[in-house]
Length: 106
Image 1 (cartoon, rainbow, N blue to C red):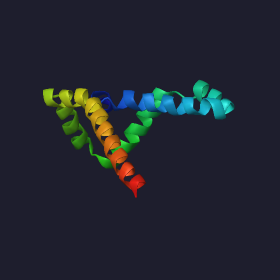
Image 2 (tube, rainbow, N blue to C red):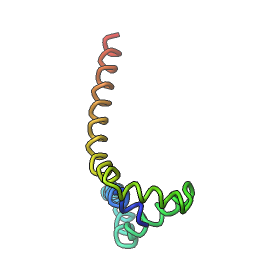
Image 3 (spheres, rainbow, N blue to C red):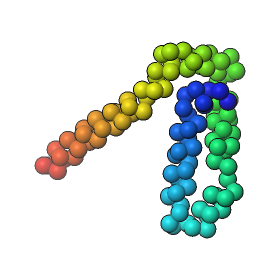
């Protein structure tokens, strides 16, 4: 599906699934080995994304979304999104630390 390629969803999902899989390595070695050898992560990601996008968007809507992500501003959004998420996460962490420090003072 073109959309998951354009948005970077496919690569991000594969990375997340691989991290999840690695989390099983120590505690569930047998499960880890089976999953690692029997599950095609890329195929699974595509299948799950297709299901999810089909559930919420029509083909016409997907085509419009694709056009956006093919535009220069859509491409910029894909490039900048990881940095935006990092900045938001760092700011959220700082805010949480401030709230916790205030709560600890009480």
